[in-house]
Image 1: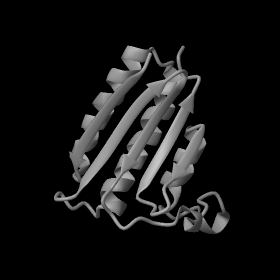
Image 2 (image 1 turned 90 degrees about the horizontal axis):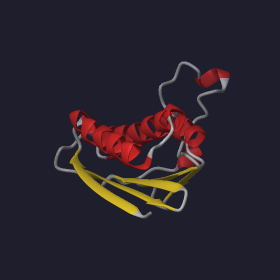
Image 3 (image 1 turned 135 degrees about the horizontal axis):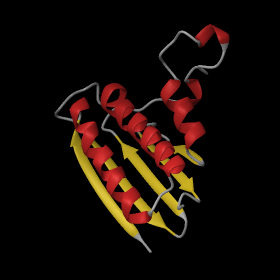
Image 4 (image 1 turned 60 degrees about the vertical axis):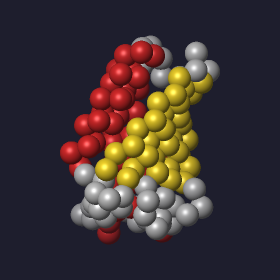
Length: 136
């Protein structure tokens, strides 16, 4: 079964609920397990939150594009903002003692641990997350 959903939201935090609703719909349609649902939801909302706040600097004239696709046994979620991007290699590791109190870097860290694969484009304004074996 192939499935594809595309969402475009203004860079306002309140619009995260539209993405949450889409994840809920897809989870119900596919029969995603409860554990996997939590991983997908948290990673996706983290990516969208980062795109709104860091990528687009909460500018409502800028948009965040979310593409959700399903094929074989992979759920692929791509989140793109209109910002200038960043270098994910330079994000501080939030688990290192010096960085424990810092709020920066937690999103990328979380996404990398929740998704089976995490990839940024060269510019750093698009993240692609892949989730495998999530059907219960």
